[in-house]
Length: 351
Image (cartoon, rainbow, N blue to C red; front, side, top):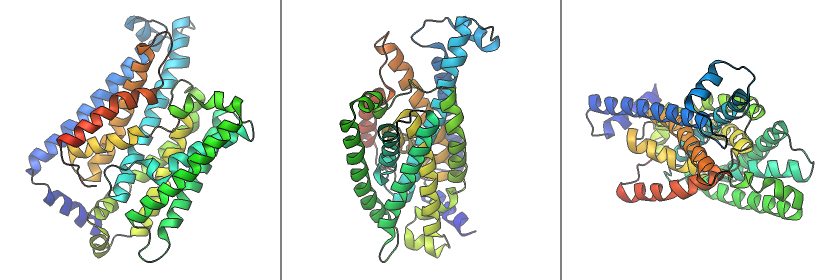
């Protein structure tokens, strides 16, 4: 297939010997999986209520109705699993946006999708008084769809179609408009502002079993759709002209990619708020480790992003006990300097 030729071209551009390259990527995936499993263990063991590791293990194996079992099964397990789902969604969405725009410093906020999803949630609360997770997900999805369609429509007008430059410019306009709308709605409704002020910076505190069951179908469909696009995305990395010469369907790939991003960002934003840093930094780090091949970048992002989100959540739980720091604050404080250091130390890997 033509897209296989694109993948082969990316492999040939990498000067690392094939055997060494494969070993490095395999070790990277295993290392990312280990980081994620460690983060899951910490998330289950650490919280505002002190529980010994033995108590946590016993509660996981024997749900006897005790207080410890209630804390573990009703609070920490759903919160941890929802964090994994939201983190994987944000990481893969960021990798998709960077591949679609060929901009390694792009994130879902670049196309206004996060802003659209956030506006949908704000509108559901301020205008309709709907506070359930189910309503938040559907309104976030609607907002993300509207923002994505508007950005794509702006970018696809005129000659050349939806080029990366037009997608970025159209998305910037849409993001500014939706951000202004959501901020205005919150300022006009003091009660809604009080409900949304923690969520708006990115928080896992309200993630529960309802959150998990509501967002999982959307995240699952979005991840599957994203993984089916790895070869066309590799063709896009060679440039529009080369991709067309290889037989890639550019508009279809970009449309399906934006659809996957919409599903992923809508679900994640409704659950944890408009977190943007995770989708920016994690795919960048994944490419630094595994190169530009999306067959490795997407799975690595799928593992590293929830690990980062869980570590940030755990640190937020213990940093200011008995209160909590929101995960969005922690990822910004810790992750931003690390990301800047990575950019300064190494050449940005082209998407």
